[in-house]
Length: 167
Image (cartoon, rainbow, N blue to C red; front, side, top):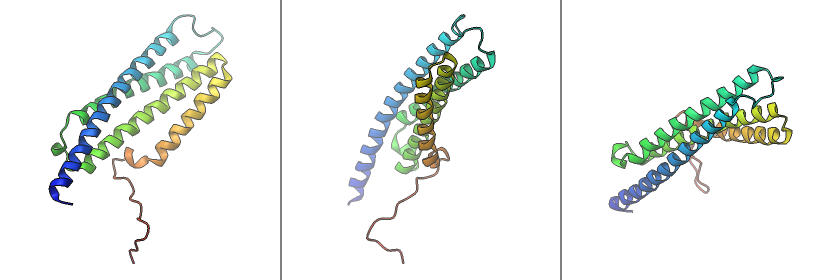
């Protein structure tokens, strides 16, 4: 493959990543607003019955606050990716690493949000919703743990190609 074709392919991939980053940025903004609305509802007087202790309410509000600000931070991270040209990165791999890191942040703050949903559902007595939110929380944590290299901003592990030997 010629160098010109390789550069064109890298530019095409970078263009697709910038477009995807813009879409993720929009999603993060919508999620941040959604979580903020839920927080307002939770803080509305009379939402929680008086028999619930305030520490559970504080936990729910804290988790929602962290996830809302985290979504905004993730949106800014995706905006940074979407407006930078490929030549501003050291390489396409560097751009992919930033993109993967931003996706991992989105998953992390979604896990925190689901933790808040599970606590809120538990406080309201919705057992099935509590179980569902907790299972989703665990699945997101498993994804994050499996892809911890993205949070460490390291390149993903390379898989060995079949049929090749390095002896």
